[in-house]
Amino acid sequence: MVSNGKAAEHPAASGPRTARRSSRIEGIRAASPDKSISHRAIMLAGMAQGISHIEGLLESADVLATAGAVRALGANVERTGDGQWQVKGAPQWRSPDGDLDLGNSGTGVRLLMGAAARFDLTARFTGDVSLSSRPMERVLAPLRLMGVTTIAADGGRLPVTLNGSTRLNAITYTPPVASAQVKSAILLAGLGAMGETVVIEPEATRAHTETLAPLFGADMTMERDGAGLVARVRGGKALHAADVHVPGDPSSAAFPLAAGLVAGTGPVTVTGVMTNPARFGLYRVLEMMGADISITPAGSRAGEALADITVRPGTLKGVQVEPHIAPSMIDEYPILSVIAAFAEGVTHMTGLAELRAKESDRLAASAALLAANGVKVELGEDSLTVHGMGQGDVPGGGLVKTLHDHRLAMAGLVLGLGAKDPVTVDDVAMIATSYPGFFDDMAALGADIA
Image (tube, rainbow, N blue to C red):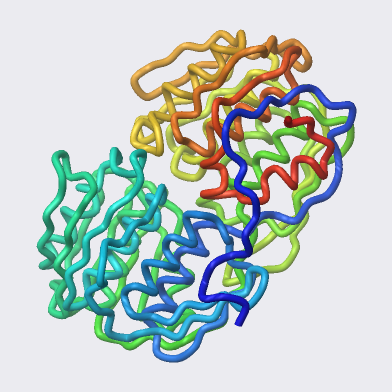
């Protein structure tokens, strides 16, 4: 074994960074492993009988926090090489000796609450300052309907103490807010419930749990219902070990590809990107904007189709981004707002209330990012309007307050690559939570980030 579960040590990037126009932005990079599937693979393997092997796991701070928590709950989780992990599952999780600290990971903490709910255990979930400000009640409410008892901080926030049960009730539940995290928490708890648990989504969200869990033997299905989705899981079936090769993350791929669109001197290609429709909204919007983008099928991994995506710099136009698109690109609005600044005309995005409950108030912070760099924006309660300035005409020169949000930090740096004047972000430490290879990938493409 290489280690007891920690990725190889690298100097952590932290503090401010400044991005400026480069003489070259082009090249080919492999997609960073998908964070959502990495979380789920570790959790499902940790509950399964036998030894699972995970290839290409994202070794980010968020995923490593999930791996540590699953280990604390009784599974044997070990790193065997670069991106290579072995998990000997514990079909009966136990109460951990200390708090389960999920750092900055909303996906990790919410899904793990659901996974832990089906066992006779008591666990106290904590996180960093940013995660502790995010709402947990949306997950806790349905779990209590299933028979879990919880104690949370004011406003249903962390720290949360959860008392699970091996005799959970199956429920039928319609989440009031479209959230793959809420759906997945309920489905993971439903693995141990008596009867069939059903989650009804009026607007379909990403279905990675529904795709991945059957590989581990779960009796879980999904069916489309117009724009919505109905997911079902029948409890009581034991999980077995499985081998998983994690596909590339479309959310992380958005940043080098955006750099190619707004600052490129030639083509930028990211290979092995997952094309799950519930995660691919940004790329469909880019097509609407007239981006020079090609999407070439490239096989599949873990039940998910892959593609190689190439972009070339060119003229973009402002578009209307309707609310129904939001669930398929909820994490990509900060970088879309940056791309919109380099388009010709107005881009109007609506249905974005969920952005106010992310690592930061991403809606207000995205508007502030652009305004600080000379771009005219209009902020609504659930909308953002960006008045595009065209290629080469975004002023830049501002300081971006990242508010402990990795996507804001990366979006601000991409803005600086195409702006007239350099753009500085106040901290980059949190980028490691989702995309630890960001700086290496951008440097390889020619980005000037100092």
